[in-house]
Length: 259
Image (cartoon, rainbow, N blue to C red):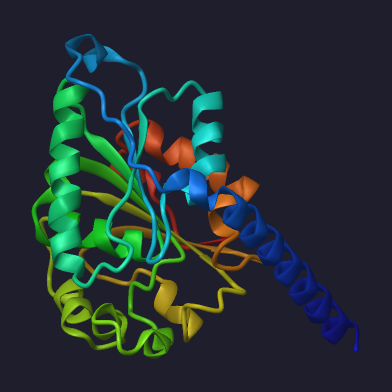
């Protein structure tokens, strides 16, 4: 009985947290519609302590989902943080990954050739992974952090029918199969966060990044859903640490549980 009560209480807290995060995001959504103005190349940034970070939102979303994360990064002295907006009705992961690649190249030019970290929420994480794993982006991106990303696809994609992107997000799609292919030379570190109350990644295990060739660490954030991940205090702290500098290979550990 006590275990049932604890599970029920955890579920109630998770739903409350997710509802609050969604309400906050809906209020901020209009502010994220305009595209961000990108800086011109500034060679004097080449020796900054902190390297640039790109933030990539999910489907039907925009850069407003990262409002709190940007504030957190700025509060830790991270000045070179940029959020990308892409087509809300993206139909192809591959073309979105190519667009991300152009932004990465521009960012490196702006900041004197520094490697970049990418944080992707939901579909944004899958786009970032496709870019570094299959389009050679691992040379330019030292870390990819994914938040609630369907690395193995999701049965929830059937709810998106008849949108073309639904076929690419379904388990066993051509995109998911491409990502399962060998990637022995991929050098990017992956940090994959998923919530144990994420209603969009079905079944939940498909949110884990499992690939024998990739340097990946999975972190399960308990009591958290899909929308709450980008504002979760523990996630914000870990994103700041993971994106600060290129990691050493020994920095990645076993899969973790985060309360």
